[in-house]
Length: 487
Image 1 (cartoon, rainbow, N blue to C red):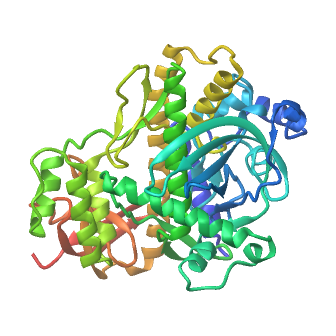
Image 2 (image 1 turned 90 degrees about the horizontal axis):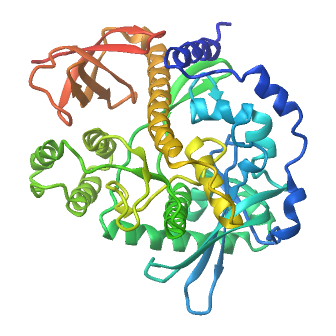
Image 3 (image 1 turned 120 degrees about the horizontal axis):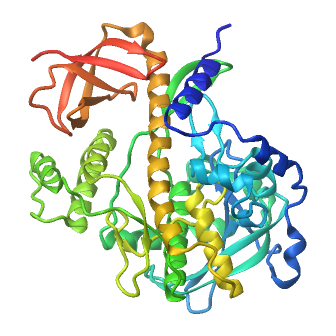
């Protein structure tokens, strides 16, 4: 039987090479890997042993590259201490090693429908540097005390030894938290874990509420995942946001803010993850006006958030399409070097100042850089990167992340083209998701597929709806061409 999975893997490899990404590890990196035998827990003598805490991981069902664990402890004043343990990847991947050179080149794991191309070899990312269940692992712990109103009262960072007591998955935990399914088996079998997770959920909701009151945006984009039966692609499934994903997301945002604040307080130049104020704000104003919602003339996150909340309540089915249009109009996040002593660059979408990436060092190189800066600062050692190095790496990581996202997007389109090959001539409802000199793009409402509008694009802009006919597909290039009908 023909293998769709093999076809997509081949396309992914070619797309990576075309974008200057390396799908394979060098011989030097693999030779280095062969000499790494332990998870370096021999460094444990002078660090806190927190293996007894009820740490657990919550991730995708199939994830094995586990970067973080969480645990919560209630305090007498009704505040809660949140602890986020981040895998100490630097303990085994040293700066300027062959493994580090590969990670620095790609800067990120690339997740495609054909295959996963990890930033670090699987022996590391899914084993020795992964916070796998039942394993003692080195970690950097970010400790955050959260008040009843979601305010962060205090924070600290330190190295520790941790152990994952339960590997949990987003969907089953979310269904249980929402009351629509019984507790996952692992939650019931680990004494006290159910109460622990409910406490974490409460604190995450507090953090989220406070952020959104300050103007964080309720964005919800559609990212279809390929569904296979054996080797055959059978469908595209949209991953829904849920309570468990938000729990982890809210804790990671808090941990990233605390980390940025810690490095700034120590006077250490470091990365910031920023989202600049939207250049196409006027078009966002026009999109909102279509629903009778006035937005101010200048970019205003709180006003945009109020509009998004209202639209989600009014039309939850189509909200992700509006959301995607807004995401494209806002623009892309980027890494910058922050050497300022006072005001920090801002992240428009999260409504936070002073934000970095630190919580996924197995799969993102900026997080590994940040981890090295933290470890050096905690140890009172010299900073491992010069400011000019960091400035170069900030631009490089932004550029390679963009390349990786383009590969992932192309493979989503290749998978979609495979799925639609037999449906040429059929008609669909669509929403315009992008317009530029290169053309106009539309997303079908069902199946969740994006393609180019090759005729009838005149007068359309992001957020408009149209009726389209499927004209052609090209699986290799990920091209899907539509024509507008009913003009």
